[in-house]
Image (tube, rainbow, N blue to C red; front, top):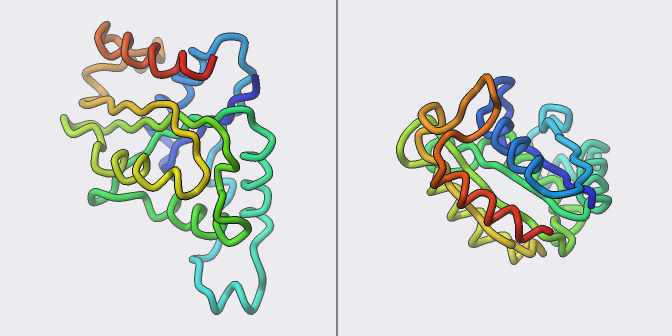
Length: 174
């Protein structure tokens, strides 16, 4: 199984990238490709720009990466209760290729933050809207207080309760 994992964050020290990578590593016998959405940076979407220059190559490449995967793991960072601008822009451009951005793939949606909310607002928005974009959402999980629940050196969850929940969510891909 080929699993595509990424954080919906442009931070170079993204805790969501760490979570996505760790979660994807829990899928048995999977080949994991960890994307950095910074590699898909492009001008802010506008219909005028699309009419003038077409859909950027970066959006087309991202869409192909999703299409080539057997499953997708996304961990969402939350900016002011919503998606990061970097992810939203990438998603908006990609949706102009085909509204079925996720192409019917099984998707695990995660989120984390340093605080106790665990980015639940953005995770709720993502899981609620995902089916409209052809995502087969197999499960979702919010990890609150990331730095209290994740060992940065070992790159793994330390909370047995959260680990059990994450293992259960990730098992839906097997």
